Amino acid sequence: MFALVDGNSFYASCEQVFRPDLIDKPIVVLSNNDGCVVAANRQAKAFGNIMYQPYFKLEKFLKQKDTTVFSSNYELYGDLSHRMHNLLASYAVEQEIYSIDESFLDFSGMRYFDFQDYGQQIKNAVKKQLGLPVAVGVGITKTLAKAANNRAKKLAHLDNVLAISDLSEQEQNKLLAGMPVNDVWGVGSRWTRQLSDLGINTALQLKQVSPSLIRKRFSVVLERTVHELNGVPCQNLELIAPDKKEIVSSRAFSRMINDKHSMQQAVARYIARAAEKLRKQGSCCQQLSVSITTNVFKKNVPQYHNWANTRLITPSHDTGLLIRQGKQCLDRIWKDGFEYKKAFVMLSNISSSKDSVQYDLFSTEKNNPRTQKSDAIMGVMDAINTRMGKGTCRIASEGLRGQTHWQMKRHKHSPRYTTQWKELPVAYLK
Image 1 (spheres, rainbow, N blue to C red):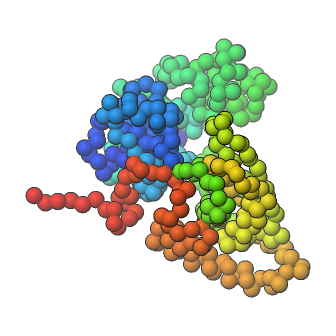
Image 2: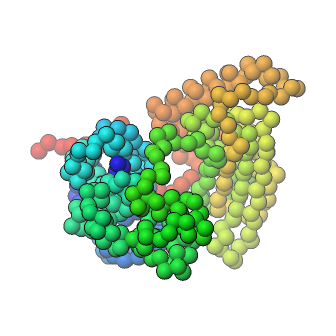
């Protein structure tokens, strides 16, 4: 027995936690550089098709609708997500953190529970302790738990909780008949079109199709989905998230870059961010790629795009070493006379830092003294940044905080209420 607990309009809900004056009012959250609408609460979604639309096109309309607009506050969302997942873990035998706002819970050994009531308890606890609205779906497989969660959010009379396992097969089929096939977990747009050609447009129709036909026409992955819709578990919880095989750091600049020094700072910052993630999962990389590109949407200006990569002799997670290698890549592809909109950094060929490493025969580091020193330095840097905030301690080539004109634009940024002492909410007594 599984449950999927999913935050409702999570980014918008996080913004509402410390702003009770915004309850029942429309809220939208923007992407990096305040570009597009990436999250909206129920009141804002009622306006129509606003998701993923450019903000500059919607700005006047949203203002007329008295909509509160926020820049993305990743620090706040990440901290509230961590608190929510910790709370949910206390309600189950095991937990899989599926995304920033989703958790699978394993209810094994709890067969005599009233799961509809238990789901309500979980929903109420998250709302009471964190102020976040969630939906809870319970099913005998992960796919059915996902489907139950989907129906719980979209059918108002279910009050955001549905234990589909408690329903008769006839009642389950009625719910699945009203669920579009593209809402089934794992069914993307390409499979949706191909399934539609076969006359399969709802979750119920997918449930009732022959698994062998699906395997023959599609894949074993979709065949497992069919089995799971029929109550046959094919997926267990992933209790430990797999290490990433590639780590990418890439963001558009708040303004165009046309000088090499600024681009070097940006590439160094992106490499530093990727290296932090690399160390966090206890890994090293052996390949680094750097790419730069102009704004492809501006057809009236000269266009340029190029990339370069380098392979390290010895795998590393040292920020300084990776930045030096990144600068060499940038030197090979940089061209004056262009206005650059975006840089892209990727670390690949990743292996565990605990694995045995073959050192360079001709390197002065073959006895590994500097690597041990490097690990110690990186450990201290990460500890400082964890305690004092990201970017507190950084490599000089990344540029000084607040003095890099290309950094992400977030003019509508809310306070980081839970992670910054200076931004704690203030209460006044009357």
